[in-house]
Image (cartoon, rainbow, N blue to C red; front, side):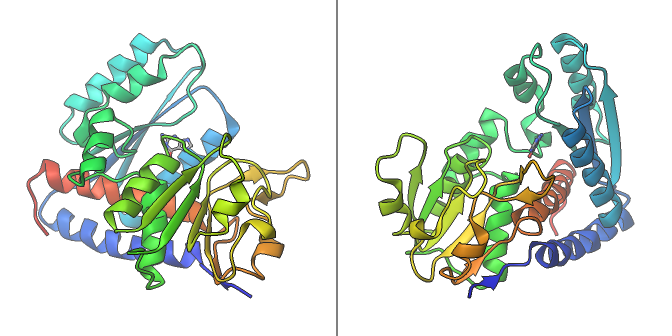
Length: 285
Ligand code: GUN
């Protein structure tokens, strides 16, 4: 049976380190601050934004929330971003996704100054990530790298197979894995004979958004399985992209859902806000 990778414990470990750095910054008179914008009233987004606020309190950062009505225009949203970009007391800016359909999402993501782009969604930051020159890191993929580091797993020379090619998880995860000298394969909905590829993985990352998509026959003996999925079943229960009960018998390590990759995302958002603040104030610690 696989060892469980405990996302909550690793989150706490990382948040403790971040909190102590925030305290040191405050002694120097510098206070990191995260501005979170939420447009409309999507209930899941509301939960995520509340969790981000709680995480800011946990590490001693200032948080600012801008809740805008559903009918907000792209121009109004861009004007708010311009104001926050120009505000030196704001270290990081995040616009919670999804935004309502009438809003030009790409224009919004491009408008956040790259130095304050704590989601690492701006094309400039995506480019910096791929060249290894980035300071801000994509939160969910970075969270998974931190989990592996905590468990003492070095990706160098390992075959990492990623199922899912999203801009938020699959693609940036491939870049982070490459930067650690893993051999990387990205699979997606058009991949032929997916199980024959996923079975070769030393590290298997499931980021497809389909409950129980990864079945036991798709996993090689002893693989490390990281499950990014957060799917809500009709029963209201949360479930990942991996058939956890069956796969845990075959894997050597596995992340549960809930309590696995999810908790790490917010910890990395705090890390990025701290990094952004230090960069903006030319502070080396
Ligand atoms: N919605 C779901 N996940 C995310 C995320 O990581 N960042 C933002 N901005 N919105 C999200």
